Length: 286
Length: 286
View (cartoon, each protein chain N blue to C red):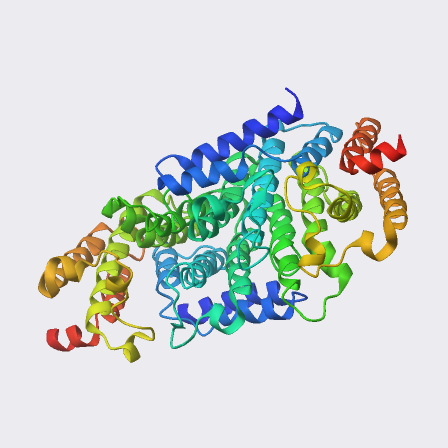
């Protein structure tokens, strides 16, 4: 089965568990927040690492990938709320709070966070569950996960590296480390790969926010300027940001630890990262 | 060490982990949401059950108790938000969103949920972590945990039993089952105790909402009527609700499974439940 099918199936199983008997609006919002997905880049990375490590426990790898994506979806639902970005569109459709109201949107995010841990407990080898819960908690919670990243936006003085590492990088680190841990490998050497891809993704996102049109992006453009968020393309210029992105991708590929499937993983990461480039840049590079 | 000291210490350790290096407002809000606490009735119940089961792994019991209380605090922070109860006061002080703003309040709830699972992973025996994560997830998430309970309030047709069981009962069931699991006992026979105490607590809460003054309650009274929520004292009358409460406490005490400390647990539960009665009823009963 392809990694993409594994991810969709694992997510469907997780959401199906949460839906059954739940209040109908919440059940509907849970599925709406998770399907159809975006690029599923974090769970793809998680499964790619598990495969590179030999894919010794596919059920655990799929569960870890689903957990990471559920947490990503939860963060999108909460970030879009009126008290944060007040976004109307996400992945080309109305955001959860626009469709279901703010109360259900808050609860959907909460339920997705809980469901991520429930999914780990249901799928992980008991000997590895502790490592997986720790990896995922660190990626999402305080002090340095995506929740902390979002919270930096409420501060007047924001350390840029801490902010970006928490807001975007932490869940990528969680994805690579969880993939390794699910396959029975030591997760620590896989953190750099996640960190570099996370940074690359952030730069690509900043470029897209400036270069794309709303249709390509599936959400309004120019939101960083509107929300006074730092943007690498605004700080370094388009050319500088593109050079930084290329450096990060090279660093990511070089950081891959020794493992049975290292070569295949290198190629896959280069191919996946290419998808991140905004159309305009990809065409210019072609 | 007393159960109360164990709980405060375990909560302090958990919050200290999340604070270190976190954005300052989020760090402050996390501590503000957890300390000083209310009656800590759920974690007390968790530790009481672990003790009745022999308290074979106090660190795990304390971690489970802290996890349950962190999740309770998370639910209070989110329930108080403007899009739900829009409450200004909680435990006699301004609610988290009044003090820190809605964005930090949303993130505080999220971070507390994650911290609960992190705490379980840090403290549980690896052989029991899976059971503990499952118990706690079921108590909090969809389809039947407190998040689902809150979501029933967004529905037009609300099955009263499902609503109350999810909104209040589920986390009490989580507390008793987690206490047993942390001590290495089969959690399933402990669910009824949690369920009955949860129902009793709900009836007591309904009575307090009608009978107490705001000072005794630490929050505004009469909120069920304001928010169109079902209230047992309004439905059954004060006398009917009091009789129901007494029946539930008897049922709870009778449900306690065979275990080394069953007698002590029976006495403790009767004493704790007595604290739940509103002053006015306790005086009338004296």
